[in-house]
Image (cartoon, rainbow, N blue to C red; front, side, top):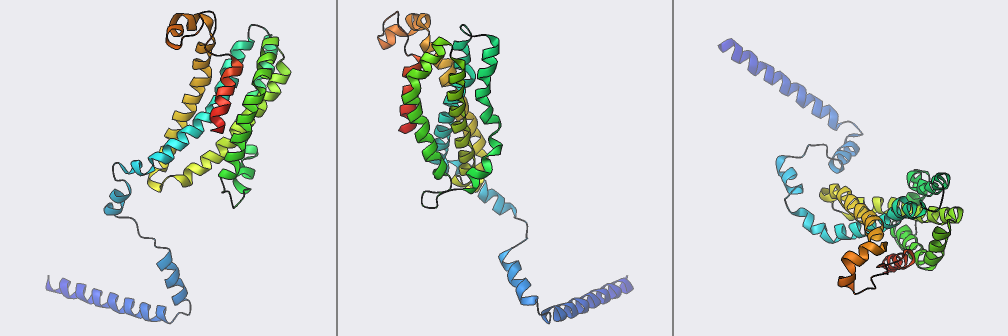
Length: 261
């Protein structure tokens, strides 16, 4: 037992000598100072349990509640043209056009699937005075709002007359704008929220897009149906029993005004 202790202490002594020798030679290395400065500015130690609990304090999301509300609103506005083009307009067109023409109209949804093609431009080009994300969100939202207001009645006439090609071209541009805004908002969410709350960005996206889609699809079609309005809404909103709550043009003008506000 005593021999083992002596050997162990001797081993520790030899290790200490080796370590001391290594440190002496390391300090003589001309790159020692530069590497030490690099390590000071780039720590590689793993976070302790105290750091983890500090970054994941329950209720920390409340500090970003206004930012999350803004994200939900922006995603809601993106969901409005999606619900209109993906759901409501094909439903209105199905009684006056053929399945072939409905297939042509479905091309209007493709910009959202192909947004990867121009996402590098949205990420890499911006005005420094306005901001990296606002440089795209503000003008895109403004153009979308103005277009909804000014083209609402024209689009309604095209849908009623079965003018699929013009309606497809206009709706394709709507979805192109929504997809462009989606790229910018997705990038903004990563910097708008605190690092510990970035995981809530996907929740804001799901809530906003689903709400916007539901509003411009289910809610719009319900308010556009005379029978539904006569049975359930006429007594609440004091409207004519033979008139819908809104038409396609009036609904688009309402959403366009929300875009601009």
